[in-house]
Image 1 (cartoon, helix red, strand yellow):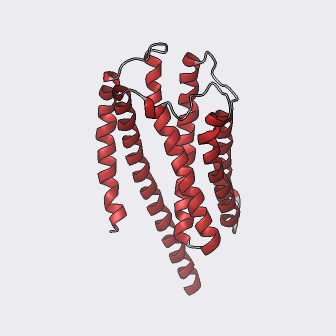
Image 2 (cartoon, rainbow, N blue to C red):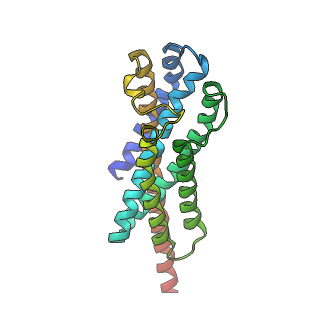
Image 3 (cartoon, one colour):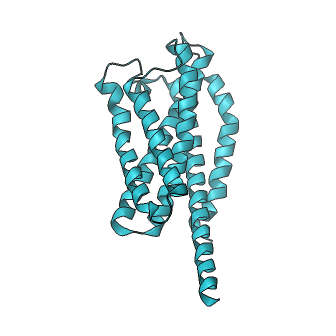
Length: 223
């Protein structure tokens, strides 16, 4: 068994323990003066958004490697990361409006960051649709789509600093009080452990699927 496969139960166990403790840790954080209890959505919204961008960077980087080297391992990593980009992007797009309704008084605002996040989420949905229905050779086109999706990540991150928007700037998180920062980094660590475990599990599934396909092809050649 590979080291990455042995790490999966450890990562899942650690993330499960941290998610179990998360409600207590978040409850200990002080309530924000204007938003009150709803502000605590932020402790899952922000880590999910950052994990979404990390997953997109992983997918785009692996896609670039695949485009230049045609290595199957890079393609498997790209597929796994693309799926997790969509999953954590969906969590971000659901928790964001819940927080925005209380904070801004609206469910949705077409500002640069939110719009770009939605566009990137759609790009990675397109990636998965290509892989599912694109047929033979769709890996190359999907890799180009994954690379394009990754290019949106810096724009999403810096957009709040470049344009005047109601979205908080990137300087807000580093300046959080310690008693708000601790639960935020705690939740992000839990989500990162879960993301890593899911990524390794999905890569293993792709590797097993490829091995089965090779076995079927070998049987067909013998028959």
